[in-house]
Length: 249
Image 1: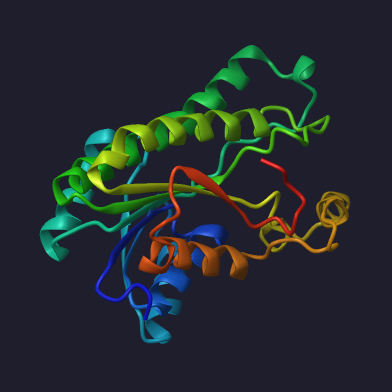
Image 2: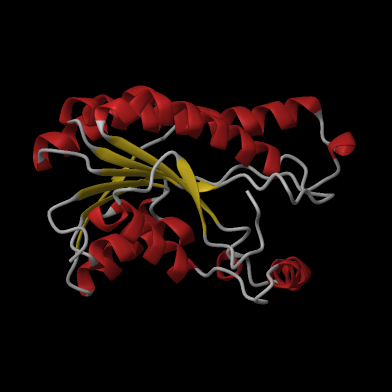
């Protein structure tokens, strides 16, 4: 198995994307720690993993609380001996409006929360990974500079900001054997709400691909597991494009 004896921590592990990554990591032998704020969704993912024969534990932690994040990760490392994979898939608070219509306070607050949680969780993982001289930090969303669309509000801007954060982590942590990789998807349509209003957005993502396909949650999990494994050891300081050609980051 690709991730046997590895410890993976997933912030936002009770969500659709986080759950897909957790499923894939556990299926490849990783011991998965799911972190979030909603016990029910975390346990749903953990129960699914256990039923499939995998290992999963949950913890209710506010990923905007640095002390809580550090305390939890310290406990994980004390229990397992290492943290080998850390990924934050906590969704940016998206405001899908023209920028002119978004209040300054709402815009700043949403971007700030996204950057803050990624900074906190990555700092916590990096502290342990530097000591280990190994580890993989995965980011989700990516930056597609060639394809900006009206009405996206703060969303692409937020992903761009997080991608800049990832780039800085990459140059600072690479000397310690730590890999940093972003998964660029262009939109994962089976993670969208199943409501009529989203059908147009789903179709636009499919239409943007030269193959007329869109990444699924299973695709995200499979690629994440490969990148985090030794098979992906040469992949770092970059984005991995899993958008079926829709993005040109």
